[in-house]
Image (cartoon, rainbow, N blue to C red; front, side, top):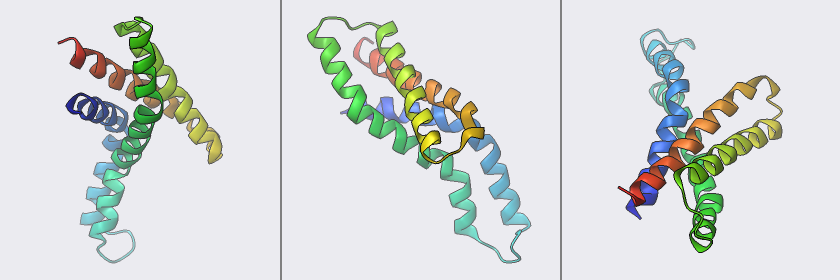
Length: 133
């Protein structure tokens, strides 16, 4: 269980860190100079943590529905390796992000697929390292 939690946490942080470089300062500025004329602490917290929440949801669900079954199949086939896990993780991260962007018609956000690749690769790498450390 700890192995799974550590992998999901690492992937979540990897996928959310870059967007949070933008959202955390925006939230801080909104606390100092509220754009709406009134102080909205919860709105600022939501803005700051939104990338983390989104990344967690995507990484967790992908890990449960794709990662764990893939790990079971790789173990059954005796085909486990760091490269195999990372390739699957990065591919799934890319595809999940791409499908999400296409579903909401956010065609200008295709650069975020890089974050999906990073989150999936880090999640898979952490899973592999936890098993072989």
